[in-house]
Image (cartoon, rainbow, N blue to C red):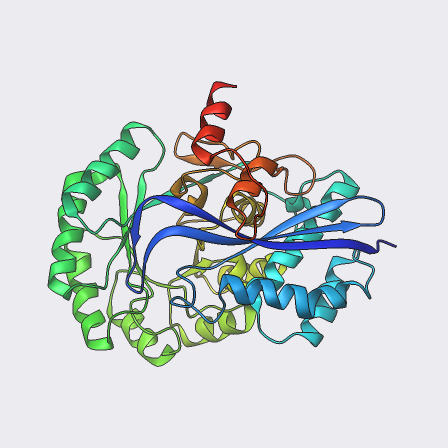
Length: 390
């Protein structure tokens, strides 16, 4: 029996390399909730709960995620054999409603511990185990400036880092947004796949017009153009347009996945571990999508290294990821909180192969970026320079 000995939950705030412009917010930093659980045998597991733009994206914020874990979830863990991850999370589900991001962070930490105890990667604890060692990675062009986005896309192609690009649109008039997308499609040509994410910011009428125009300019996919709870409108749009509609904010775990599939409301699912409520639930969403003939895409909440590694382990178990993944979150941040960064190269991310998540935290970086830090630490740029010279 594994008994919880200690839990530490804290928020880290890491600046982004550039402003990241979305329909509902502009990000200049990413705030991540890190949870560390330790059992009485000294086995430690880490997890991450990350959302976008505070409460501008959804109904959980970094502060609420931390509060839910500390106040309501940890007391449940103290009554469980935390080596039994499924049973433990089932008890958490009975005691705590909603709070999918917080539950995901805790489940991730428990799976990290389980993998370490068994000496196997987390991916071997999910479904039938991993079926791939690397994942194709998209990059989001979200400066909002056409010339800058084209230059950034060209740079990523030249560095062989990304050849799938997602554009954040929805803040401007539809025709203006389509002109922006069309210029990028024309510039990158057949060297890349260009998709868009509207983040629910269009009405059905705007989406009807915008999706037709986007298809004409060479866009491959439209992510959540309208409100995620309007399945009837999503169904009408999916039936009308050849360009696939991808469900994102509409997805909140297996039950919503089944409703979307039953309504033929989307041609693609964006798999997200936090939005689904954990790694096990994400695997269930993927299974529903596969059974329904719906394409799958590995999404992100712009997590740091911990959440990205956790997502990679789940996505590595999905037999058919037609639309790739977008696990680029750590690359958007100025500093890495892992002691060894995740391996990106040749348009892909290597899935960690060590026990558990296969990662370790950089204690100095955590000390610097912790929101509740009290001790004096050297500057993050100095840390970065020291690591680069090591």
